[in-house]
Image (cartoon, rainbow, N blue to C red; front, side):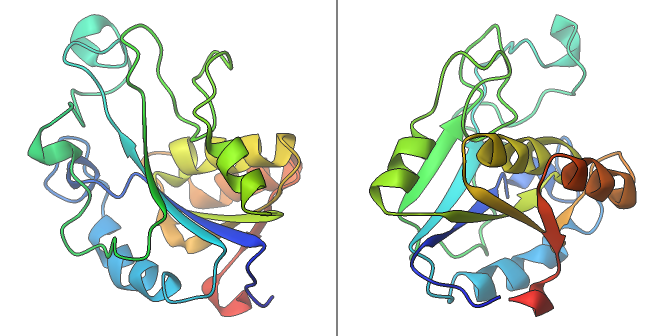
Length: 190
């Protein structure tokens, strides 16, 4: 599957709080960074990174009754992109999850599906037909971003070996993605 200018790379939430030792650290997530940096050398028509960018006291945090520990609070070190992740070839860094009362797993819209981020428009302006999604966490924001892209009419691919799962078994996630029309591949397929 050769990469072309009609492809976009979306690197989801490679942030300090999701790396080992972070507030919501995912085992092995730091080992993805060299792979992601190598992907950024490919001739994508757009390369985008996302960041969870939550206000203090966000609805997703356990003290507020949410499912996750406090993480990726705006303007904190935990919310910053991993220091070793290359950002020089990114055309955009998209922040999500900024509304106090609703989370945003997908890079395209909030969890209520009511507030688009503008990502779909940016991709269409650049003539993107296919999105390649990877990063953190496979079972949450990567999966939701890939499924949303598919629903919006983009061909959607998740790179399983350039992603890590927070809780759900990666095989189960792959089955869920395939059921939603998303291709699940490895980097060697590129």
